[in-house]
Length: 260
Image 1 (cartoon, rainbow, N blue to C red):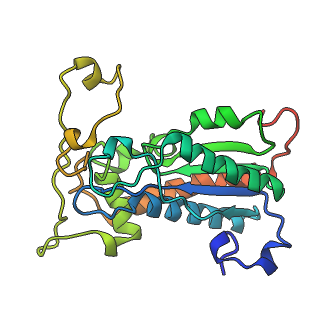
Image 2 (cartoon, rainbow, N blue to C red; image 1 turned 60 degrees about the vertical axis):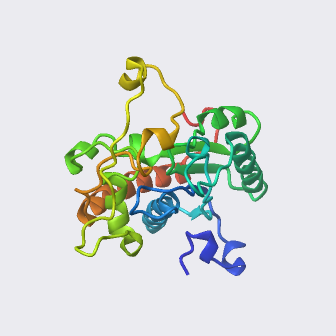
């Protein structure tokens, strides 16, 4: 039994454990080029959250990883077969109900660890801020958590199923990565199409991108320089940073000035 993972833990232990922080991994069910599984985002979030919670637990922080939510917002992939969508409002209601459960069980600190770019939770944090005693934090691990080290580890920028995600997959669920007979990745090059608008292509005007027009096989980013070693390097940084934060969060006093 790993007591920092709720799904593996029994009631005899849970009822007497003073959990201080909950971590909610958020994933998605969607294609990731031709070589990665539909559950890539969920598997990533579980791998990162589980290891960060373990490291925090071993430093004395009583943290608990909730079961991952394996669905996300897929409105821009609705033409990609078996992308399973939950609209942002639906996803927000699910999280709101879980927050109410945590509040009722006396856990007043929650980190949402998001692994899917289509999930946008900042508006939800603002909406729930004055309606619950649970203090919510959000980490989109693929953005700020490793933004300053990606260039030192990876060779290519990554948007979806490229070098970064493929490296994490090769390190932590390699049996689910599809390969050709010669051992190479069974993936295309992850090339994407430009829109007809320079402002959108340069990023200072944004849209929701229809994925079936943007990509060939849902990949956005070159995956063929990925390696398990790169995935392990990324994980080391993420676990060190997240576990340190979880320890601080567990120790923090929830006074009138929190989090300042």
